[in-house]
Image 1 (cartoon, rainbow, N blue to C red):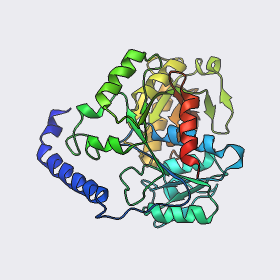
Image 2: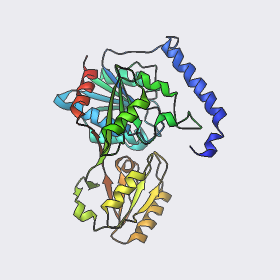
Image 3: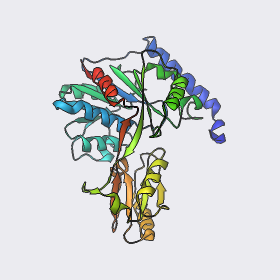
Image 4: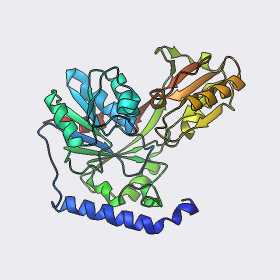
Length: 343
Protein backbone atom coordinates (compact mmCIF):
# COMPACT_ATOMS: atom_id res chain seq x y z
CA UNK A 1 0.00 0.00 0.00
CA UNK A 2 1.42 3.40 -1.03
CA UNK A 3 2.00 5.72 1.92
CA UNK A 4 0.25 8.60 0.16
CA UNK A 5 -2.97 6.58 0.02
CA UNK A 6 -2.78 5.86 3.73
CA UNK A 7 -3.44 9.56 4.28
CA UNK A 8 -6.90 8.85 2.85
CA UNK A 9 -7.82 6.41 5.62
CA UNK A 10 -10.44 8.74 7.19
CA UNK A 11 -12.24 8.92 3.83
CA UNK A 12 -11.89 5.14 3.41
CA UNK A 13 -13.60 4.68 6.79
CA UNK A 14 -16.53 6.82 5.61
CA UNK A 15 -16.68 4.93 2.31
CA UNK A 16 -16.66 1.60 4.17
CA UNK A 17 -19.45 2.78 6.45
CA UNK A 18 -21.58 3.95 3.54
CA UNK A 19 -21.22 0.75 1.51
CA UNK A 20 -21.74 -1.43 4.58
CA UNK A 21 -24.98 0.36 5.49
CA UNK A 22 -26.16 0.06 1.89
CA UNK A 23 -25.46 -3.68 1.85
CA UNK A 24 -27.22 -4.08 5.19
CA UNK A 25 -30.28 -2.32 3.77
CA UNK A 26 -30.40 -4.81 0.88
CA UNK A 27 -29.79 -7.79 3.17
CA UNK A 28 -32.65 -6.74 5.47
CA UNK A 29 -35.02 -6.01 2.59
CA UNK A 30 -35.18 -2.28 3.31
CA UNK A 31 -33.97 -1.66 -0.24
CA UNK A 32 -35.78 -3.84 -2.82
CA UNK A 33 -34.13 -6.35 -5.13
CA UNK A 34 -35.64 -7.57 -8.36
CA UNK A 35 -35.42 -11.16 -9.59
CA UNK A 36 -36.28 -12.36 -13.10
CA UNK A 37 -37.82 -15.55 -14.45
CA UNK A 38 -35.01 -15.79 -16.99
CA UNK A 39 -31.69 -16.84 -15.38
CA UNK A 40 -29.32 -13.95 -14.73
CA UNK A 41 -25.65 -14.71 -14.01
CA UNK A 42 -23.63 -11.86 -12.52
CA UNK A 43 -19.86 -11.63 -12.98
CA UNK A 44 -18.32 -9.10 -10.63
CA UNK A 45 -15.46 -8.15 -8.38
CA UNK A 46 -14.67 -6.35 -5.15
CA UNK A 47 -11.21 -5.10 -6.15
CA UNK A 48 -11.13 -2.20 -8.61
CA UNK A 49 -9.75 -2.89 -12.06
CA UNK A 50 -7.74 -5.62 -13.71
CA UNK A 51 -9.11 -8.79 -12.09
CA UNK A 52 -9.81 -10.44 -15.44
CA UNK A 53 -13.61 -10.31 -15.60
CA UNK A 54 -13.68 -9.94 -19.40
CA UNK A 55 -11.99 -13.26 -20.34
CA UNK A 56 -14.16 -15.01 -17.76
CA UNK A 57 -17.31 -13.39 -19.18
CA UNK A 58 -16.23 -14.42 -22.68
CA UNK A 59 -15.70 -17.99 -21.48
CA UNK A 60 -19.20 -18.04 -20.00
CA UNK A 61 -20.84 -16.55 -23.11
CA UNK A 62 -19.02 -19.03 -25.34
CA UNK A 63 -20.05 -21.93 -23.10
CA UNK A 64 -23.70 -20.94 -22.85
CA UNK A 65 -24.05 -20.09 -26.56
CA UNK A 66 -23.36 -23.68 -27.57
CA UNK A 67 -26.32 -25.50 -29.03
CA UNK A 68 -27.98 -22.30 -30.21
CA UNK A 69 -28.97 -20.97 -26.78
CA UNK A 70 -29.72 -17.23 -26.97
CA UNK A 71 -27.37 -15.37 -24.61
CA UNK A 72 -27.41 -11.67 -23.80
CA UNK A 73 -24.75 -9.58 -22.06
CA UNK A 74 -25.74 -6.47 -20.14
CA UNK A 75 -23.19 -3.89 -19.03
CA UNK A 76 -22.91 -0.35 -17.83
CA UNK A 77 -20.77 0.50 -20.85
CA UNK A 78 -18.02 2.20 -18.88
CA UNK A 79 -16.50 5.32 -20.49
CA UNK A 80 -18.98 5.37 -23.38
CA UNK A 81 -20.07 8.74 -24.73
CA UNK A 82 -23.67 7.77 -25.43
CA UNK A 83 -26.56 8.17 -23.00
CA UNK A 84 -29.42 5.89 -22.00
CA UNK A 85 -29.82 2.36 -23.25
CA UNK A 86 -28.05 1.12 -26.39
CA UNK A 87 -28.54 -2.27 -28.03
CA UNK A 88 -25.27 -2.96 -29.82
CA UNK A 89 -24.98 -4.01 -33.42
CA UNK A 90 -21.93 -5.02 -35.43
CA UNK A 91 -21.27 -1.38 -36.35
CA UNK A 92 -21.26 -0.14 -32.75
CA UNK A 93 -18.05 1.55 -31.61
CA UNK A 94 -16.31 1.72 -28.26
CA UNK A 95 -17.31 5.37 -27.89
CA UNK A 96 -20.97 4.35 -28.28
CA UNK A 97 -21.07 1.30 -26.01
CA UNK A 98 -17.71 1.04 -24.19
CA UNK A 99 -14.62 -0.96 -25.10
CA UNK A 100 -15.47 -4.24 -23.33
CA UNK A 101 -19.05 -4.48 -24.69
CA UNK A 102 -17.66 -3.61 -28.13
CA UNK A 103 -15.13 -6.41 -27.85
CA UNK A 104 -17.89 -8.78 -26.70
CA UNK A 105 -20.13 -7.92 -29.67
CA UNK A 106 -17.28 -8.40 -32.15
CA UNK A 107 -16.50 -11.83 -30.71
CA UNK A 108 -20.09 -12.98 -30.29
CA UNK A 109 -22.16 -11.24 -32.99
CA UNK A 110 -25.08 -13.62 -32.38
CA UNK A 111 -25.38 -12.48 -28.73
CA UNK A 112 -27.31 -9.39 -27.69
CA UNK A 113 -25.06 -6.84 -25.97
CA UNK A 114 -27.03 -4.14 -24.18
CA UNK A 115 -25.52 -1.21 -22.26
CA UNK A 116 -27.49 0.72 -19.68
CA UNK A 117 -26.68 2.18 -16.26
CA UNK A 118 -30.04 0.70 -15.21
CA UNK A 119 -29.19 -3.01 -15.33
CA UNK A 120 -32.78 -4.10 -14.62
CA UNK A 121 -33.98 -2.15 -17.67
CA UNK A 122 -31.25 -3.76 -19.79
CA UNK A 123 -32.25 -7.22 -18.55
CA UNK A 124 -35.90 -6.49 -19.42
CA UNK A 125 -34.85 -5.59 -22.96
CA UNK A 126 -32.73 -8.72 -23.25
CA UNK A 127 -35.64 -10.91 -22.17
CA UNK A 128 -38.04 -9.18 -24.59
CA UNK A 129 -35.54 -9.89 -27.37
CA UNK A 130 -35.60 -13.59 -26.54
CA UNK A 131 -32.62 -14.18 -24.25
CA UNK A 132 -32.60 -17.61 -22.59
CA UNK A 133 -29.92 -16.47 -20.14
CA UNK A 134 -28.49 -13.05 -19.30
CA UNK A 135 -24.89 -12.43 -18.22
CA UNK A 136 -24.59 -9.23 -16.16
CA UNK A 137 -21.04 -7.95 -16.44
CA UNK A 138 -19.50 -6.04 -13.52
CA UNK A 139 -22.75 -6.10 -11.56
CA UNK A 140 -21.75 -7.24 -8.08
CA UNK A 141 -22.41 -3.83 -6.54
CA UNK A 142 -25.62 -3.40 -8.56
CA UNK A 143 -27.70 -5.00 -5.85
CA UNK A 144 -31.10 -3.85 -7.06
CA UNK A 145 -30.92 -6.94 -9.31
CA UNK A 146 -30.95 -10.34 -7.62
CA UNK A 147 -29.12 -12.73 -9.94
CA UNK A 148 -29.66 -16.46 -9.99
CA UNK A 149 -25.89 -16.92 -9.70
CA UNK A 150 -23.06 -14.60 -8.63
CA UNK A 151 -19.48 -15.27 -9.74
CA UNK A 152 -16.85 -13.23 -7.92
CA UNK A 153 -13.50 -12.71 -9.69
CA UNK A 154 -10.47 -12.24 -7.44
CA UNK A 155 -6.95 -11.24 -8.53
CA UNK A 156 -4.42 -13.71 -7.10
CA UNK A 157 -1.72 -11.02 -7.00
CA UNK A 158 -3.91 -8.58 -5.06
CA UNK A 159 -5.46 -10.52 -2.16
CA UNK A 160 -8.32 -8.63 -0.58
CA UNK A 161 -7.18 -9.38 2.97
CA UNK A 162 -4.15 -7.15 2.30
CA UNK A 163 -6.25 -4.32 0.87
CA UNK A 164 -8.34 -1.42 2.17
CA UNK A 165 -11.55 0.25 1.01
CA UNK A 166 -11.45 3.09 -1.51
CA UNK A 167 -9.82 5.58 -1.66
CA UNK A 168 -7.04 4.34 0.64
CA UNK A 169 -7.11 0.96 -1.10
CA UNK A 170 -8.83 -0.72 -4.03
CA UNK A 171 -11.84 -2.42 -2.39
CA UNK A 172 -15.25 -1.34 -3.69
CA UNK A 173 -16.93 -2.74 -0.58
CA UNK A 174 -16.08 -4.66 2.56
CA UNK A 175 -14.29 -7.97 1.97
CA UNK A 176 -17.19 -9.80 3.69
CA UNK A 177 -19.06 -9.22 0.42
CA UNK A 178 -17.22 -12.27 -0.89
CA UNK A 179 -19.69 -14.39 1.09
CA UNK A 180 -22.50 -13.34 -1.28
CA UNK A 181 -20.87 -15.19 -4.17
CA UNK A 182 -21.95 -18.64 -5.30
CA UNK A 183 -18.65 -19.19 -7.11
CA UNK A 184 -15.29 -17.52 -6.51
CA UNK A 185 -12.76 -17.55 -9.37
CA UNK A 186 -9.21 -16.69 -8.29
CA UNK A 187 -7.80 -15.40 -11.55
CA UNK A 188 -4.35 -14.52 -12.92
CA UNK A 189 -2.72 -17.33 -10.96
CA UNK A 190 0.76 -18.57 -11.96
CA UNK A 191 0.40 -21.18 -14.71
CA UNK A 192 2.43 -23.60 -12.57
CA UNK A 193 0.49 -22.95 -9.39
CA UNK A 194 0.74 -25.76 -6.84
CA UNK A 195 -2.05 -27.27 -4.78
CA UNK A 196 -0.37 -26.01 -1.59
CA UNK A 197 -0.44 -22.43 -2.94
CA UNK A 198 -4.12 -22.81 -3.76
CA UNK A 199 -4.89 -24.24 -0.32
CA UNK A 200 -3.09 -21.35 1.38
CA UNK A 201 -5.16 -18.86 -0.63
CA UNK A 202 -8.37 -20.76 0.18
CA UNK A 203 -7.57 -20.62 3.88
CA UNK A 204 -7.31 -16.82 3.74
CA UNK A 205 -10.59 -16.56 1.79
CA UNK A 206 -12.46 -18.47 4.51
CA UNK A 207 -15.54 -19.20 2.41
CA UNK A 208 -18.76 -20.90 3.45
CA UNK A 209 -19.23 -24.63 2.83
CA UNK A 210 -21.77 -24.05 0.04
CA UNK A 211 -19.47 -21.75 -1.94
CA UNK A 212 -17.29 -23.11 -4.75
CA UNK A 213 -13.80 -21.83 -5.51
CA UNK A 214 -11.81 -22.30 -8.71
CA UNK A 215 -8.33 -21.13 -9.73
CA UNK A 216 -7.56 -19.89 -13.22
CA UNK A 217 -4.79 -18.34 -15.25
CA UNK A 218 -4.62 -16.10 -18.30
CA UNK A 219 -3.21 -17.63 -21.48
CA UNK A 220 -2.02 -15.61 -24.46
CA UNK A 221 -2.87 -16.77 -27.95
CA UNK A 222 -1.09 -16.12 -31.23
CA UNK A 223 -0.90 -12.47 -32.17
CA UNK A 224 -3.08 -11.45 -35.08
CA UNK A 225 -3.31 -8.58 -37.52
CA UNK A 226 -6.22 -6.22 -37.86
CA UNK A 227 -7.70 -8.39 -40.62
CA UNK A 228 -7.77 -11.38 -38.25
CA UNK A 229 -4.88 -13.31 -39.79
CA UNK A 230 -2.54 -14.90 -37.25
CA UNK A 231 1.11 -13.97 -36.80
CA UNK A 232 3.36 -16.95 -36.22
CA UNK A 233 5.90 -16.86 -33.41
CA UNK A 234 8.64 -17.28 -36.02
CA UNK A 235 7.50 -14.11 -37.77
CA UNK A 236 7.02 -12.17 -34.54
CA UNK A 237 10.53 -12.87 -33.29
CA UNK A 238 11.93 -11.14 -36.38
CA UNK A 239 10.20 -7.84 -35.63
CA UNK A 240 10.78 -5.01 -33.16
CA UNK A 241 7.87 -3.12 -31.74
CA UNK A 242 6.05 -0.95 -29.24
CA UNK A 243 3.65 -2.49 -26.72
CA UNK A 244 0.70 -0.20 -25.91
CA UNK A 245 -1.84 -0.88 -23.16
CA UNK A 246 -4.58 1.01 -21.39
CA UNK A 247 -5.58 -1.72 -18.94
CA UNK A 248 -5.29 -2.46 -15.24
CA UNK A 249 -1.93 -4.07 -14.38
CA UNK A 250 -0.34 -4.08 -17.88
CA UNK A 251 3.00 -5.60 -16.77
CA UNK A 252 2.15 -9.23 -17.71
CA UNK A 253 1.05 -8.05 -21.17
CA UNK A 254 4.24 -6.02 -21.64
CA UNK A 255 6.40 -8.96 -20.57
CA UNK A 256 4.61 -11.32 -22.96
CA UNK A 257 5.09 -8.95 -25.90
CA UNK A 258 8.79 -8.59 -25.05
CA UNK A 259 9.12 -12.39 -25.04
CA UNK A 260 7.45 -12.67 -28.45
CA UNK A 261 9.27 -9.94 -30.39
CA UNK A 262 12.89 -9.65 -31.42
CA UNK A 263 13.94 -7.01 -28.93
CA UNK A 264 13.68 -7.94 -25.25
CA UNK A 265 13.77 -4.19 -24.58
CA UNK A 266 10.49 -3.69 -26.46
CA UNK A 267 9.32 -0.15 -25.88
CA UNK A 268 6.31 0.14 -23.57
CA UNK A 269 3.61 2.78 -23.44
CA UNK A 270 1.12 2.51 -20.57
CA UNK A 271 -2.11 4.49 -20.38
CA UNK A 272 -4.92 4.54 -17.80
CA UNK A 273 -7.50 1.74 -17.90
CA UNK A 274 -10.17 2.34 -20.60
CA UNK A 275 -8.12 5.24 -21.95
CA UNK A 276 -9.75 7.07 -24.87
CA UNK A 277 -6.89 7.40 -27.35
CA UNK A 278 -6.54 10.78 -29.07
CA UNK A 279 -4.79 12.02 -32.19
CA UNK A 280 -1.98 13.26 -29.94
CA UNK A 281 -1.62 9.77 -28.45
CA UNK A 282 -1.47 8.31 -31.96
CA UNK A 283 1.28 10.80 -32.86
CA UNK A 284 3.27 9.84 -29.73
CA UNK A 285 2.94 6.14 -30.57
CA UNK A 286 3.96 6.82 -34.16
CA UNK A 287 7.12 8.63 -33.02
CA UNK A 288 7.99 5.72 -30.76
CA UNK A 289 7.45 3.26 -33.64
CA UNK A 290 9.59 5.33 -36.00
CA UNK A 291 12.37 5.30 -33.41
CA UNK A 292 12.09 1.51 -33.14
CA UNK A 293 12.65 1.10 -36.87
CA UNK A 294 10.70 1.21 -40.16
CA UNK A 295 9.60 -2.44 -39.79
CA UNK A 296 8.40 -2.08 -36.19
CA UNK A 297 4.87 -3.03 -35.17
CA UNK A 298 2.51 -1.78 -32.50
CA UNK A 299 1.12 -4.55 -30.29
CA UNK A 300 -1.95 -3.87 -28.16
CA UNK A 301 -4.58 -5.78 -26.22
CA UNK A 302 -7.96 -6.74 -27.67
CA UNK A 303 -9.64 -4.18 -25.43
CA UNK A 304 -7.27 -1.42 -26.56
CA UNK A 305 -7.85 -2.32 -30.20
CA UNK A 306 -11.48 -1.23 -29.75
CA UNK A 307 -10.28 2.31 -28.95
CA UNK A 308 -7.02 2.54 -30.89
CA UNK A 309 -6.77 4.94 -33.86
CA UNK A 310 -4.92 3.76 -36.93
CA UNK A 311 -1.16 4.36 -36.72
CA UNK A 312 -0.06 5.24 -40.24
CA UNK A 313 3.06 3.63 -41.61
CA UNK A 314 3.13 0.71 -39.16
CA UNK A 315 1.22 -2.52 -38.66
CA UNK A 316 -0.95 -3.09 -35.61
CA UNK A 317 -0.96 -6.53 -34.02
CA UNK A 318 -3.35 -7.69 -31.33
CA UNK A 319 -2.42 -10.12 -28.55
CA UNK A 320 -5.55 -12.03 -27.46
CA UNK A 321 -6.06 -13.73 -24.11
CA UNK A 322 -8.28 -16.47 -22.78
CA UNK A 323 -9.07 -18.00 -19.43
CA UNK A 324 -7.86 -21.48 -18.40
CA UNK A 325 -9.20 -23.14 -15.26
CA UNK A 326 -6.42 -24.90 -13.34
CA UNK A 327 -6.13 -28.33 -11.69
CA UNK A 328 -8.23 -30.05 -14.37
CA UNK A 329 -11.44 -28.45 -13.09
CA UNK A 330 -12.65 -26.73 -16.26
CA UNK A 331 -15.46 -29.23 -16.89
CA UNK A 332 -16.52 -28.95 -13.24
CA UNK A 333 -16.58 -25.17 -13.52
CA UNK A 334 -18.57 -25.32 -16.75
CA UNK A 335 -21.13 -27.64 -15.17
CA UNK A 336 -21.53 -25.21 -12.27
CA UNK A 337 -22.20 -22.36 -14.71
CA UNK A 338 -24.64 -24.50 -16.68
CA UNK A 339 -26.59 -25.15 -13.49
CA UNK A 340 -26.86 -21.40 -12.95
CA UNK A 341 -28.19 -20.99 -16.49
CA UNK A 342 -30.88 -23.66 -16.10
CA UNK A 343 -34.39 -22.41 -15.39
